[in-house]
Length: 570
Image (cartoon, rainbow, N blue to C red; front, side):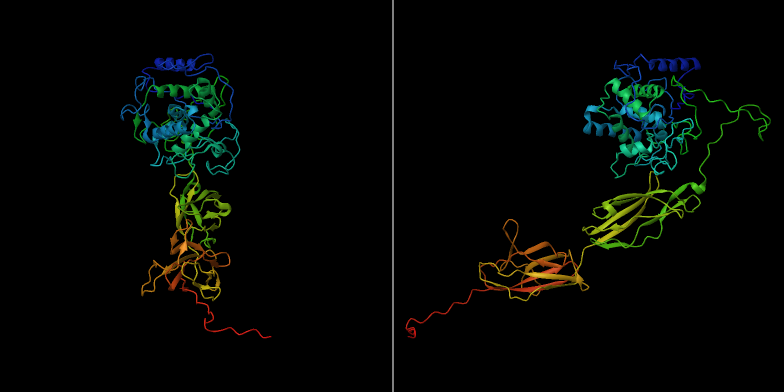
């Protein structure tokens, strides 16, 4: 890994000599054969580098390497819930601190044996992104612009070819570390988490990234209260002695106490302020065996530079290149999607289409767009998926797969978002209407009669149609009604039985089968004779009324007692 130690000395040192002594002490305390010990006496490090047991989460990409201030944030053992006071360098922005503590609580609930301390996440977050650029995140914890490490193309860094088609890092040739905790896309694909419960796993969101880092550090049944396991976990994140010493220094610092500061007021690491990238992308020297790097040479003076008056002093560092406006994603917009309606079980005729536009308002190709279904619905894209990710074409547009309605009627939403970007989504409202019938009729014309206290011998069967076609899966309601001008449910006469054998005179949740027919359950007669009505109503408004008669059977004829039956013929 290309570690950059030229910026280690902080303004907490009163003199260069004092700062040098402090850095030397920190370096020596992390050297092989020694241990870092907190003021409470807890062991902080095994002192020797154990072999890695995982591939590096960050791809061993460069990191922010300032050591902690020389002044202690507070006395050992004091609360970390301190008021908003003290320097921005020693404080942790509110949303960032909340994300670390939430991740600790989640791991405590789901993997208590790991014993993950939030201070370890804070140490890694400080080293990797300066606490997400000093807390420059939105209300949901997502960075205002992506934090990207240099291109891992083997020039001074590791060689990692693209694994995400540029979905997270915008590079379809090589990978780059992404987000507050600097995950490479291939590692995020395995370890990504939804830490804030918004249904997305976004490496640019501090809640998602902190929980993912916690689970990664806890992998392999590690117990992070043990120094050897903690060292092994940190080295699996980024395999470098220098990295381990730096993280250990911040871990010790935060264990002695810290305080919360408002979002956006933290110290922004050099090279991370206002830009997208973790560095300018220019290669840095490979690390030396001791874990340190050679200092970068100062830029040569340029006495011929116009306007400098012939000065031979050093020039200012060159401004990192910025992305041209034609290649900068400005947002997504609806690309002409019409009304989204479908009957339950059918495919939506309209396809959702969005356009990615650049800063000049023109189309932008190869933008990763994620379509996500949200809301109380069983609608889905092909294969039953509720989220799909696709790239825009040369015209900047991308069309979502065919959307199929489920059986649940109602409204839901589909959101199109630029994958891994903090840009407003494009939202669409979709409506699923219930299956309908405009006509319902009996399949026979048998009279329906029963004696009091018995059941009707014949079953009621009906068939529903819609525009003369079979109406399958249509909801039907059956109700025994009164004969009044405005019918209501009858409290006497024929009835149904529910699953518990109780008397009911209204049935819901009935549906026609694949050929549009419906057989009603058995109908029973009470002891009250008379003519009654059964009303059937379908979704869509089709209605019919069926007559039911309850009457005693006619008495059979018997011979008169005075009459003598004729004798049989001889």
